[in-house]
Length: 432
Image 1 (spheres, rainbow, N blue to C red):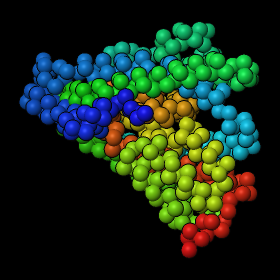
Image 2: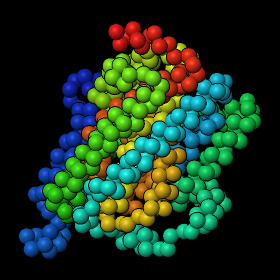
Image 3: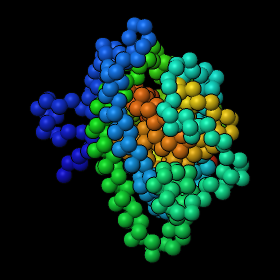
Image 4: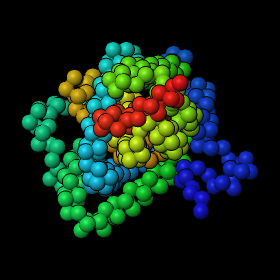
């Protein structure tokens, strides 16, 4: 039986050539939105606001973002609990799993702070006068929580209230404790684990349905943005794309190159070995499409099967280096775009939030958008920023997905070397 991607039209429709794929639809929506915003601007030649124009279809983008927002709490809760309680391989293979998780957290933390450093250094979103929505401005003006207030705020008095109010930090904390407790009761928790697996799969499909509306959301968001700010906003978005690819290149060459040096593997040999899964991930923007080839390549590289079969699939949830780097860039970029100044402490808390919320949603279409929307809502940043970024998401998704695959491949080599089971003769013969 053929598996259907809910974000794609039925195969029969695609085969007749009457319905472009989702990526093509988004690009069409992007071009249409730019044209609408340019041809029907929201201000006249004298800078006076005009009723109507491209900004008049903004409610379509708002509706799309509200649909994403309603997905966030059940999706993150189910995937985080499953990631903690349902990872049987980590329990069965204890030591290997623990080493993998230690490496994953180290790598993703470096990626997050690299992105944070780049976005604060180059400030790609600064200088654009985007008005802050009134409600967001009122919230942003409130006095920030102190350290102790933030600590107590992490623990919800009611998980239902936390979900209803979109307090993602409280949902995350509840999910962490819930997952540990569920894992502790062993087989008695299996029925609930099965239920959460069904919930997660349902939310994946639900997200796919919502993402069918992404072309309309992109069109409306970019039309409203261009109509209000002019074509100059495209230059600002271009700066973000260039900065993200520069960050990915820096992470790949410096961070992963240093890791290869530490485990005594020539980095160029490693790059040649993984070129096929890397190119598959880049061209398809799908980590899953590259997984079979990545498993095959890393076994040939000298990593034992038991290490590869645990580290690579687990890394798809816990070691998204490219995605976490993008999220740190994108979240602060949105704050800069709307002129919201965030203190170093606020940015640090945001990074810690991203570190947790980015886990477990790799199988979701446009997963980074879901996590970004959750983070923006948590820190009272305008969700319109996520809609604007969706317009260029496909271009950025290709790069971050390729780096995700590269990071997971080298993670397998790291754990194999750490365990003392990496077959040096295998990669040396491949190099020769």
